[in-house]
Image: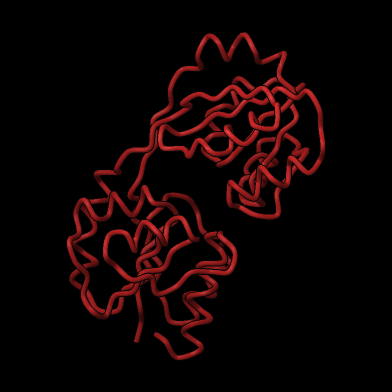
Length: 239
């Protein structure tokens, strides 16, 4: 019997991965639950663009909104392969890529380079965790942070949720706490045949804090790994 995987973030899924999911008996649908609203670049940041040494990219979205202002002199530090892919597709090089997609690991790996007297630009969402900037400043680095964009509920996506609540065998996937919170603004309970998959620990905690159980989480935080984990669990007879 076919199960439906609902991907609650916008963006294309790799064609080969989508084909593999369909061959495994899944129907894949995309219902985005968050949207982004960019802010103008603050004057203070504009004045520091040519003076800074590094741009820290903690998401592909932050990079995409900052790209029109990005000087060629800045070295780019990226939080894992997915963000790096977006950066390279825009024709820019990545000077540092963390092996982990968790912010705490990202900053510790970069600090291990032992660089001195660096000035860092850190564009963020208004929901960003301040720990990266705090840790860098703790080690004596100059860090300029600002809200590059807001993360808001995707109302058109929320409207679509009812369609999938009324069918059997659904796996809901979440790539951020923001997507989960947008979901729970509308949904107050799930049928017993529905499962929840999350991208990583932070999102898992948001789900559990709401009183729900997490059924699936990959070993490494990425959309691809999450979807591959779903296929693997189906082979093991869970779905």
